[in-house]
Amino acid sequence: MVCIFVSFAGYFTFRPKPRSLLIIGCARSGTTYIARALRQRGLHIGHEQMKKDGSSSWPLAVLPVKDRSGIRPGKYRFAHIFHQVRDPLKVISSVYMTEGRQSWNYIMKHLPEIAMSDSHLVKCAKYWYYWNLHAEKNAEWTYAIEDLDNKWDEFDARLGKKLLPATRINVPKDKNTRLTKNRTYFTWNDLKQELEPELYMNIKQLAQKYGYATEN
Image (cartoon, rainbow, N blue to C red; front, side):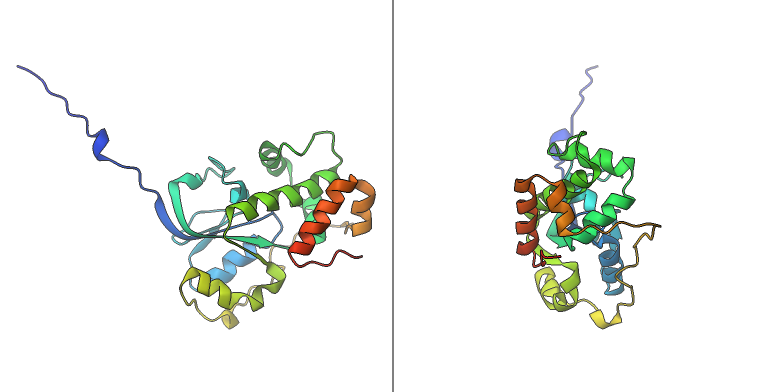
């Protein structure tokens, strides 16, 4: 008796799972808020989780093979990728106080520009700058969270669908603000004194590109 084994491997083709939207940016840039706001508008978006319509996740800004939660973006096909930004001074100040070892291990794994010898403020400033460059490169559209109320029509137009009215949103924009005692708020002067001149100017120019004032 002759045994014949047939391999079916060639009959199967990997097909990424379709998702409507991925929103990326820095930590502390309102990714929690936008996920909740979109859910109220009828889009099933997860925060650092992949849901039926996609995700809002800062770790995915660099499109890693696998993010810190185990999400593999290569398994999905996103119809749209949006880049959300927030005032750099607020992000840098917030990241300085809130992000722990797990976040920094992940960040530094993907940003060789950050050195262990950098001061904590320099690390946070470099993070804002280089992470946003990655996100901008990987996205089709960049918008500021502070201007979102004026961007909803474009948001819907880019998605190609009319979501529920934005007037129904009742999520405060500081929903995920982590209040800490003795919180530090950095100024542009603080950055100028701490950063190398080239990095300082690069951050200012990118902030201006995104529509932010760069005067104290």
